[in-house]
Image: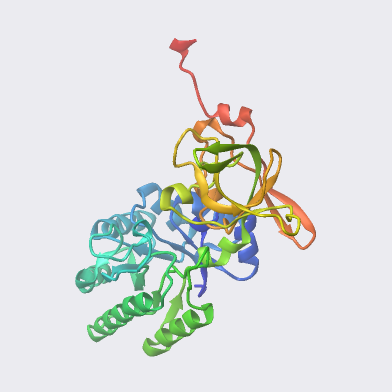
Length: 369
């Protein structure tokens, strides 16, 4: 099992996954679709960690048949269902129990995943009994523990608190006679969108290494945002400039269906003109909004921007994570094109969706003919 398993949910483009696969990464997956993407991009099944609290029987069967390297199990019911699926195939499912350590990740409420009452993981007080059950179940091979407390963390302290709880549990399990071979420490290291001050990756790496050496296990991490967020830029064209009360508002052709994070999380992304303004040009606080029929469709508020006109290009920065993967066709807007850049080379890695493809998804019943 690889020590780094890229979290595909951050950006699932095959070209992105393939880039990381060529660098030696495994992958963290959360659905049958992500499993297929990882395999198609060239990651071996044994280098995949199948996470998530809601794996269907069909997904379990596909993952078992493919030879996935680890299942992160999040409930007693899931453990029993996975054992049943494994027995039906005459195989063993390698399992890590995901611990809910009741640690506040100190991040946005909607992306915190390790507090008591969150839907993720197994309460830490229930781990010992469930690990014993896993060891006794035909079709299950318990290999360790997993933990993931949230995304976009800006301090090491929450990681340290969660990892200490996992260390305690590993020691308890070993004392009870269970060999624990690996721990999956999740992901969550933040990036700087505006004024955040996430710890250096070297400090996080040193923490992981201390944990690994302290209890003598293979340690797996699942970075996503940290790897890909800064690599993405959303280019959008100005449609119109208007005055909205006392504020200048620029309407652009990108919208919340292309980049959901500002509407969903009040997320902040830097917005810059592509053409460098002339020296000395003054800026005006400007709202940058899309054409979708929602008041939430604002990519940025009160941004200091130079005079703009229809046709000008703006760049929305740091959208490589949770950008295109969360896009939709709301208002019947086709999905945006995606381009990969390598030095001076450009390559289309996802063409712009056309209207024919958009409409082809719908079927009209015969009684409406």
